[in-house]
Image 1 (cartoon, helix red, strand yellow):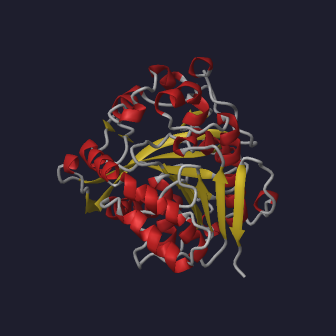
Image 2 (image 1 turned 60 degrees about the horizontal axis):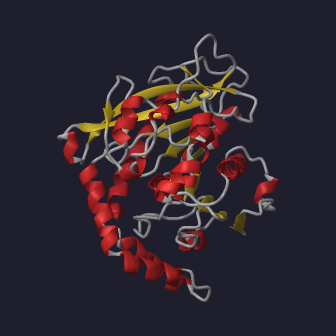
Image 3 (image 1 turned 90 degrees about the vertical axis):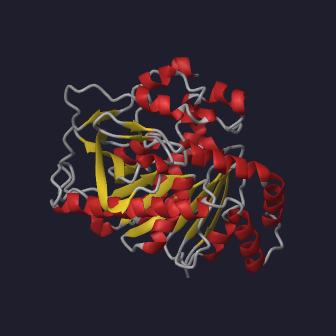
Length: 393
């Protein structure tokens, strides 16, 4: 499949897509990673936004070569071919933002652990084409951090190796706990007990997520300053922040999104795409915002406790025959051969997986940010999806 793809499919909405690359230094925080050498936390972001005309600029490519080199330090990215970097997106760098609307609702995306900001470009372009501004936050040390000045910083591989080795040691216990969580006769208290044991097996992952949540809060403050004109950019008064901000992410980034919603009322709703809720048992997190948990077949019940205790509308979406990396562009770009090498994808067709993800994410944000009811959240049309909902009374 990779050899045949020279460009991403056009997004379905009416807007074309601009993208800008920025970074901001949080002067109030020292980066905790050993490779940061005591420097302040330097956070990159990519902003996708609606445009009317790309002008003469060519579309951006999917992935930078320098970032691919750093990604390949992690085993399951070693097989990504260089040709992936030549795939054309539908994004145009720094094009003027659209004038068809006075402002646009804001969404914030968080990539997965070990990943990078562009990992879900197909989803970013889809949402932007329907009139959203989407900011993807780069989390240094736990993924590849790419900066507009040309720097590309690899993740802290030592921490990653420690995490992987710990999971290998706990594999039998992990499987036993997953089996217990999947029982249909569990009370909420039993579900809480088994879920807590499951999460605690991951040790430091329960604390490291706090750094990611702080990244999101800092970037939210920064985007507010951009919208108010304190930080000069073409996004001044272009973000409809009065509607509230939607958060979403994949894996560790999905967890970060839900936990951030628990702490800050500016975040109106959140989506977690296949991320175990590390740190989620801490008492400071109060689950009171509309939430969607999208799961693969790998551990389909792992977030059922959090779905059940949420005080507002909750949705639980399991995509059958999917695996963890199906919630990324890779399911579309390279699944046909990548899965044969390391088995990180399910049997679901990659194009259908992208369609399902795009439809559910857009419908959720349309309902809770724009106030537009969606038939998709009422009646599930997909045979590949197991769908549940709990609505606030």
